[in-house]
Every structure is written in structure tokens, then in C-alpha cells.
Length: 405
Image 1 (cartoon, rainbow, N blue to C red):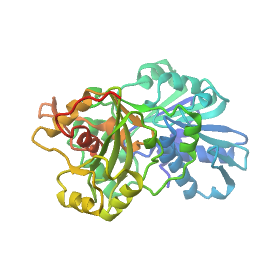
Image 2 (image 1 turned 60 degrees about the horizontal axis):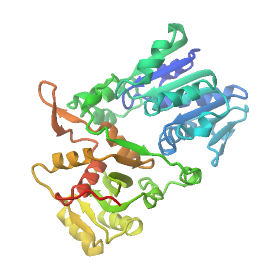
Image 3 (image 1 turned 30 degrees about the horizontal axis):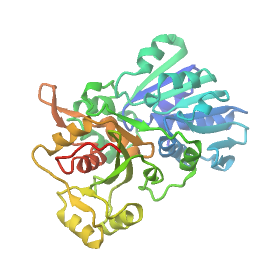
Image 4 (image 1 turned 45 degrees about the vertical axis):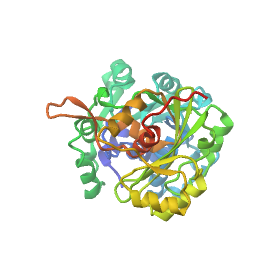
């Protein structure tokens, strides 16, 4: 399964290959395919694949690499070291995976080829530390949510004959199904989303709802190693290890129900010295009520406050009768969404690294626009499931006091 134009572009003899593109364009997969075949046919090369955190790497580039490896005839010629996240080839070449928040590796050994996946999520200093230790080539890819250091620093500094800039969209990927294309195209009405993810053009940062949040770093190396090496539990349950390490006082759990097209999302929320600490516990479609209760029984305190989407009273009643005694319906009204957003905007929000879907939502949650293209105080009803869960619990009840513990 090759995207031949992108694969050929990656093979160009350029010092920098920069992939700017929308969702579903195949840019990441094409880079990983190229790296796989490069390692197979070149001796003793070191290739590094980097993303902002290990959870992003594990569920993104590393998963795609294993799929590319499985699709090829080369799988039997590759050995995986699951502890160090290194794939070694019979040629003596190796592909290593590590995260940009691993300080020792940023300033560690040199390599021949570097690939930074979703490079807009790492800072310019981290890029420079990695790039200066790269002998031959650096490949970058990203969704152009807004201008960042690639546009402002890197591209202006490069000679025309020393780099290749590629812009791709879902229309460049012949391997998408008709349903996948329709799922992308149904979001045309969201002008800024469509500009970025549909057309691969640079978006408008001012349309984002939240800028008061950050990914909570995993400072302890032992905890980082435990998280990196922990196996996935189901295909929907994220690591719950960090949820037990959140500082401050447990405010409760937020639940947003979904089923076929929308996921059921659960977040755990703590408050400490005026800041919120949030961990995503669950994000899954097609979940039956008994499965949801079994998950809650295993992973959360059923007697603690849990605020759920009040549009599902029968579900809430079922879960309560099963033994989830802390579950309550969310306060909803004409202004409940704006009210919830406003009080969340008053606090710094710290999100654990494992909360991949919440992080993705925070990066894509946009204000809607009117017919003149002006932003209005109403969010687009997309990418809001974990955010809604957070909003439910933090705005319950509406008259709440800030806690300092």
C-alpha cells in the first residue's frame, strides 16, 4: 500500500524534507515506509523517529511503523527490542523511537536520519538539539494548525536546492475509503478546521477556545519508563497509572456518553493551588452500559462525585442502580456550555501525557463563525467529548468555590 508520489518525494536527496498536510493525506505513513526500506537496503545506518511524548509516539508513529512493517515482505528480517523501542535490520541499520521530552536522548548520540512526527508539538530548541546531531537528512511532518518555527525560522533559513516542501491533502491519498473521505468532507462547514485538515493550509490560532492548558511532564524517569513499557490494556483504555499520581484534591469524574459515532469519555479531575489536573480514563465508541460499569468498577471510586451527560437519564439510572452511587446528572441550561467554558478558561489546565484524545480535542476545539466569517461565542460541536466530560464535573454545581489544598 504505497502513496507513490509521497514515497518518491521522501527519497529525494535533500537535507530537509518538510511535509505540511491535512488529515488522511498519508504523509506520516509514507515517511515510515521510506525509512523502513532505507534501513533494509543501507548498511549500519541509525534512524531516529521522535514525537512530543511517548504516548503520542506509541499510538501514532510506532503503531503506523508496525503496520507498514506488517504490510511489507520485510517483517522477518527485522528484530524488535521492546524495552529500548529499537528495530534492528540484517543490514546492521536500526530505527529507534523516543520522545522529545527525554532530555538525555535529545542531547545523546548522533544519527544518520531524523524524522520528527507532528513537529509542531515540540519546541524549536528541541528540534535544534536533534537536528544538529543528524548527519544526513531530517524529515518533518505536521498539520498546519497555526504558524510555528518551521514557517518562521526553519524554511526562511534554507536554500532552495537543500530542501523539499510538500503540501498534501486527503485527495492525494488513493488508499482512503469512500467512507473515510466522506467523514473528512462532512466537516467543511467548520471553516478553520477545513482550512487546516481538509486543505492543508495554515490555520488561524485565534479561533482556538483553549490556550490555558499544558501537557503535564513526567519528570520521574522511573515513572516514565513504567509508562513507556506498560502494555496497552484494551484498545480504548489509557494508562490509569498517572491518575493515581495527580496532585491535590479529587474533584470528581466527568462522563460524556456516546456509542456509534461519538465515544464515551471519562476524565478524572483534581484541583491543586488553583490549577486543574486532568487524566483521561476512557475514550471508546460502541460501549454497552454493562461494559461501562465494569470499567468504572475497576478504575474509579464509585462513591466519589461523577457528573454525567444529563441527556442520558436512563443510562445514569442504570449505572446508579448497579452500584455507581456517586453518579449524578450534569447541570444543563441555555448557558451551560458557555458557563462551563468560561470557568475553565479561568484556570490553568494540566493534562497528563496519556490523555491523547483530550489533548487532541484541546488542540482542535474551535469557536464557531457567523456568515461573515467572524468568530462567535459558541464552540463548534466537534472534538468535544472529553472536554464536555471535563466541563460537566468542573461546573457542578454552578455555584462553586475555588479550592486551595
